[in-house]
Image (tube, rainbow, N blue to C red; front, side, top):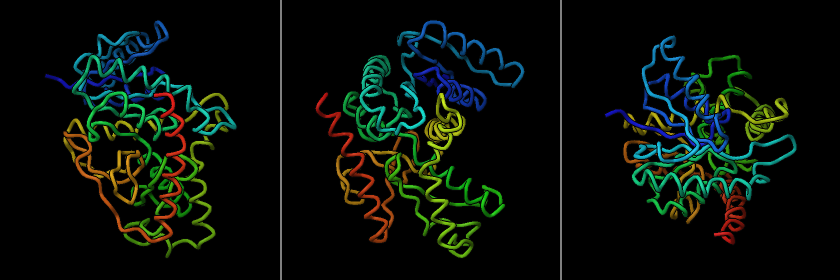
Length: 310
């Protein structure tokens, strides 16, 4: 029996998630969207790429959730994208309603699925899906840290003119302006970043990583990033479906780790067949912990607003 993944939202992020899942032959894919014809058309177009690209999975599109039944993973990308000048937080209430409805429908047809959230503001949308689904905490997670870390690694590689594959980095915290790139743990093939760049250059790269999404929104003007977000999402999907047990930074529900309780925040976790199988609690410096708590506070403020609507 082949695995099955539902992608909710047939926009740029969702369509690219479907494409990457198909190209890796991870699962059959159902793409769901409220706009009539769009998920059907995109799924059929992707399906017709199969003979050329050499993948052999089924892709279908739908405007309702019945075809999604018994999915192993449900990826939620649906929601309004950012426009120039908007923060991820500006999207809060509009996307809360989208994610709430999507979660209700997905859970109705796939009660045993894992939920991977991509919709912004990411951490608050994870909280919404967690509350609505009533799933255990290991089955609800958000894609953020992988993307933020990839951006940080990219900027370091560009600065040093080295392969990004040689760069190791880690970004913690909420998916927003308060995210916490851990400079102390960043390295190039084991060489600490602090030995390769001065503090001014490091500060500039940290700032660029924090605003990596906004930089792309500014260029695009009518939308937000989708190639890198979809790549990061599918890395999570693959680790779960293949039980790879990759250690990746994801938004997960914390119950006291790092001094944070009852909140989704980005930290390193092990992803396998059971979803979030382990949360890694790194020993942070006082400054790093303070920055992480500041990030968590920003997430908490959004969650408190949502709580009044539940």
